[in-house]
Image (cartoon, rainbow, N blue to C red; front, side, top):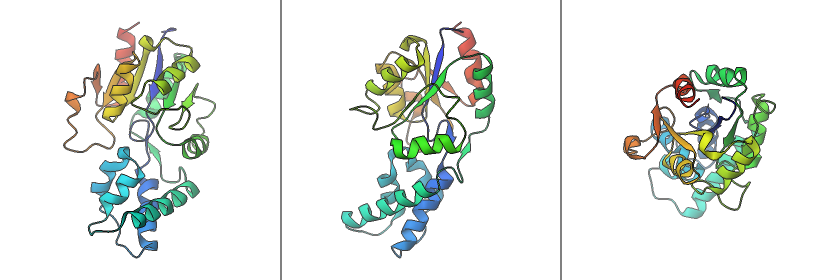
Length: 220
């Protein structure tokens, strides 16, 4: 297992950040005299970014300038409460503990900006455990481009072909495939019914974090 590495997408894969994001959105909507969002619906837009969440939360027609103001209010509120209501997905801590025990280096490649990603990781006491954290603004291009993936591979000191990349969005699978990594689509996370995960051309699909363990063992 000395040649193996593992990389994770952040929101919707490693962490369930929906509590913090939706709380920030609802407060921002309230500040603009709007009703709270439909959480079950808007949660499925988290992987599309904060602006998509704002648009999905509002039923009536609103100028884009106002939508952008709500988005900025949401992001400001979110930054103030990073990690407060963010939790690991079920089984994820078991997987991370196993990776640490096996001395398999792991890290994160996310499109989340560093001003959010780094404090969040610090607040969750993960800074000393990860070998790399590549944010959406770490490189000139973000996922699904291969650039951030290859930078992470360098920092893990692992060949891309020996790295498993887990993600809950199509761009994650595309990024893994185009960088030569082993793409793993996870069925938990922030999916829409129309996503069609089985059509994403992922090398593997897993329903629980611990299901990665036998995949890694089979590659050793």
